[in-house]
Image (tube, rainbow, N blue to C red; front, side):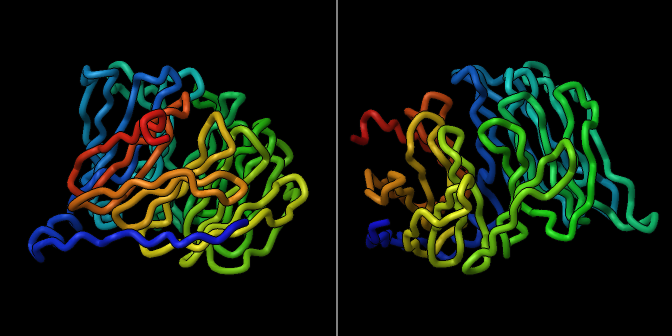
Length: 310
């Protein structure tokens, strides 16, 4: 993969503004499959769901229990395949929320370890077949159908902190930061384990090709999941380890501090955008691949219309 100089300008800001930005921001953005519905979550666990210009609801998913409150946050947010539900990894629960009303349809709370240690979900993923999976911080993985029926639950020493499904929905793929591992979630058997060249802080899986992207402190590595071989690597600068694949093309986007870069699988840099006066905290492609929503530290969501970027 071709190397590129991916340096963004760090816009100066007043110290008070920088401090305020650490306490605020949109840290999750997700598009619904209808292309109109969007969900955003902030660092205070407020979730907004909109359809076009209409606000469907706003709800806070915080917990008042003292054991949970110090570490509670929303760690994952994805829509169901049909767009009827919004799944959240919030505090110590996996929650399925009705997109239209904000009502909880079902939820799952893992049993406490030793009867008192809180177990929390750390990531979520949905498959092309409609299933939803969660990874937990005690090394367990679970898969449910859209109705909340648990279809699989297992523990593994290589249990990941970041997960996604293969294109066909049959393999759950994740990383524990040191290896990229796949499981047949129906048999709960590991299908492959690929050591990583450096510690991984971000993961994304393509829905148009058997390709995974892992992000380290200094680069992004692309992997062919069928051959378990490296495709290439691209250097990156400072910023959160955010990577997202286009749902329609062999293209991915990643963030660097206050900018977003669009890159083809072959390493060609397609375009880049700089966010003024804010850091990038989250990003997501629209369902048609023509828009990238960028959640920022100033509590704003900025949209990058890719047709205009060409």
